[in-house]
Length: 151
Figure 1: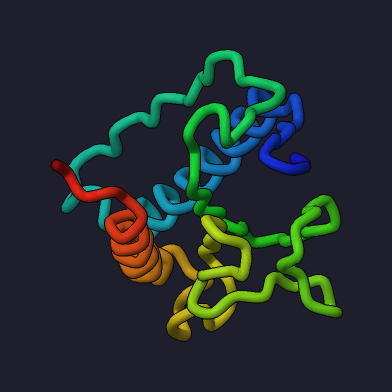
Figure 2: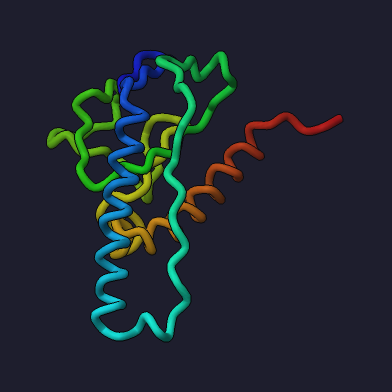
């Protein structure tokens, strides 16, 4: 992924990334199911429902955020971070995103999943949800202020 001005470019790897994520999920679920069976808990629990693989359609190669009316981006940073491609003035001297509670200095750019973002569990799945709600409230408040009043 790359960004320049209001245009973002996406890697052509959506299908392969999705397939790889489905594989990792299936492997994790098999380990969990194995533990349940080994612990003798399978007789107490309903049978696991199969997970349907995600099959995304074609993805755009580029997107002009301004032309599409997109004013806000919430970026879930993921476990392995690399921001070398990010050409926005939001990186510190160590290459980390500068933010306060997930709000970056770039208007409309928010991040989730950073260490100690708002609480100790911010980097974990169960912590991101709380952070996401707070950031959503922040975005809603900013959008409400920027919208002209109805006549």
